[in-house]
Image (cartoon, helix red, strand yellow):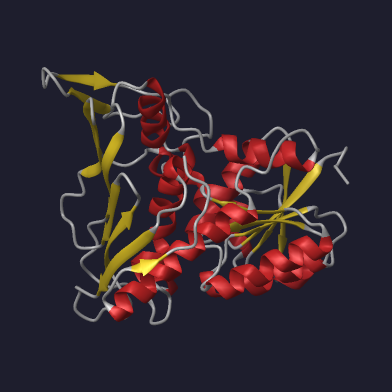
Length: 350
């Protein structure tokens, strides 16, 4: 049943995801109330959110009838079991990406959501990056013509291996960390590809999980190249999109994450404004012109979640969409294992 009163939210975890993304975005959303944060470091939470309840463990949230929506900002390996437990407790659930470590785990979560009639969404926030919003506008305008080639990169200058769960053995490494962003954006634009060819490797000394990923998505009439790496001192290239009428080039990452880390209030003047907008290259004259787009808008995700829970809108990232991303990620792992192209099940095409 749609909710009619306040929607109380518990953010589970107060690492980078909980602290930088979820807690500030939930607190800034008019339709949601940041009610509880689950963390063993109560002092750290209270220093930032003095009026928010701190729960010592996940079980406390599950048993709290005042909590309506649970946001899982926990290590990837916990996502599936925690999501199922929250759904079975009657909570609405938002899961940070990746949805789960495996496609089977993700499908099991969706099965529980369907059986319980529960709300389930995955936080694919980079659909609301300034550069991706700008790219969508460029494609919709028609001035690029038919898109034939896309290269999209998500690189980081992190040559030293850190002792953290995202880089641990069995974590999936950069492919499960950054790959979901790259894959979700492309599926949003073009639907499911026919096949994937993927190469994963470890480049850093002491690395325990892949820190370099390169994949090619094969569509009938286009090719999409995905890259993610941790040893890139100049992570400049973000998008290179080529169509029959022109190209669109973009450097630099969206600013909303660093703005939040720097303490900027969500939605403050300048929030999400891209300091290095894309460039359009005319296919006939080869003239290059700036192509500014809209500001990034992560708040739109939680506004849509709130509307969906009230019965006034659609889930911004549906379980079916999240499963499609997992299908591509898992096929990429298999492709890298067998060193060959892997076919994908047909899906909606844009």
